[in-house]
Structures are given as structure tokens and as C-alpha cells.
Image (cartoon, rainbow, N blue to C red; front, side, top):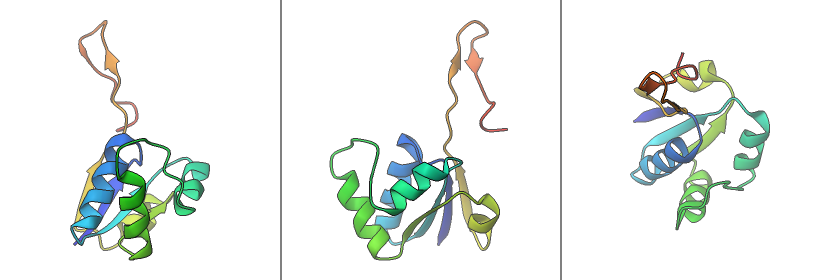
Length: 101
């Protein structure tokens, strides 16, 4: 299955790497082109035991990739997950959906 993960932060990158390890083709979309370049070079900016090895192995196997283009990533996608920040708006008791929109 071709899966798009919008956001390559803690939730998106970890979920994407795990889904790729299950055999799915996963494309992580990130707005920060420097972060995408870094991930493509194998530098994982998040500490989670085993994540770097998992990401590198699945990148090498062609199951995990990174892009800044949602349009490119979405071609042929069978599932798209949104994994962007939704910080709390404590004063109103809800989440800031700015990044989702």
C-alpha cells in the first residue's frame, strides 16, 4: 500500500518508519526543505530507540522516502495521514489546528 504521512516530526516519522517496516511504501511530506534533505541523507533528528536504524533500513529498501511536495507524494496514495503539530490552546480548551488547515 502507498501511504503518505504529512509531517515528519515525532509522530509522522516514527509512524512512517514503522509502516514502511511492515512493507508499505511510505512517503513523508515535510515543509522544511532542510529537514527533508537531512532525512534523505540518513540523519534522524528524533531520539527514539531503534528509529535511526529502522528509517535507514527502510530508506535503503526503497520503502521510505521524503519530499516537500504534497502533490508529488499524493499521486497514487491509498492512505494519507496528517501528523502535524496541534498545540494546545489552553485559554479556550482546544487544539490549535493552524498547521492542519
